[in-house]
Image 1 (cartoon, rainbow, N blue to C red):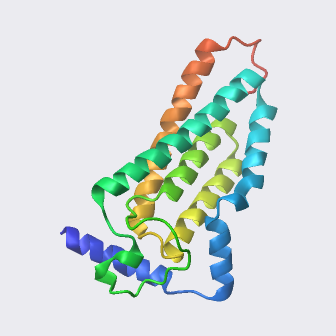
Image 2 (image 1 turned 120 degrees about the horizontal axis):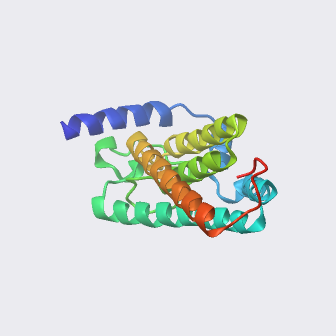
Length: 194
């Protein structure tokens, strides 16, 4: 049964990874980049501080950093424990994976990129509570996740597991943020802000 699931995973991977051209290679490398998204992170940070007083904003930023720390460290440890090869190292693909982005280790389950971006997306969507923002940030996270498959760095199941884990961490850390901010920070009567 597990081998059947892995074979389906390889088939879906090859369908996504095999459809490529120079333009999409550039788009997906951009989507997968870390430094490329600094302007987005700066806008999110500005939005956090704009929405509420600085004490709650600082707690929210600490929450986002905690999401990143947990997603990154746990995904790394799980990858080392499980030891599932990335597509470029998978003997089941017999060297057919097209790896556009180099670097990273041999193991890929589960995706740190996916867990980080979905963790950020979940936490900030709950924080801002704006439909347009939630749609935008989830679409952005899906683009990043898709890019990891397209670039040959992860199987679809790696990204799916990273997505689920990131959403769970983002949700739990947001609940922790709400619990602590509501109890530790006494504010003037609410004016509609978080």
